[in-house]
Length: 122
Image 1 (tube, rainbow, N blue to C red):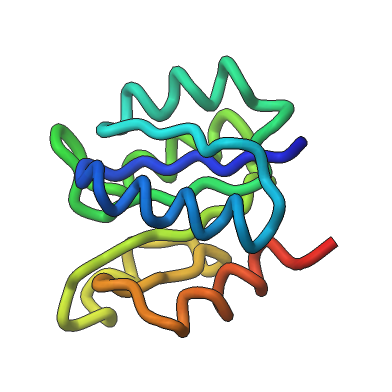
Image 2: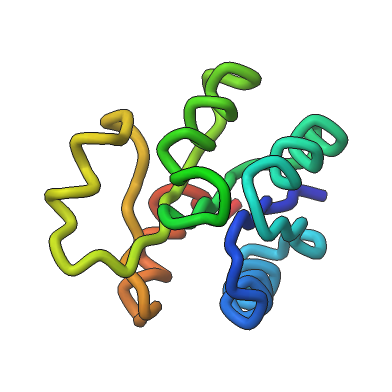
């Protein structure tokens, strides 16, 4: 069964987002990392099961755009959604590859639409 890798330092947000994805898209339990290094370890260990990575932009140790670079070096085709609480999304966008989706925090109903675009229903 497919899984999502959530790299986010706010544990409650990870759990909420993970539950939403499991319930809505029938994924296995999410993989959760609180920083980029832990996220990369999980990606390498469970790569064949991961369909999408959700990465916080402001992570301890390094910004999400650097974590995305590492993910893309490992798997150039991985679907990625970045989470950000930034008020000005246009400040974040130039630092990201064009195919990375942006999900705003706090999460809202529109996040389901974004997830459906990147994960889809099968």
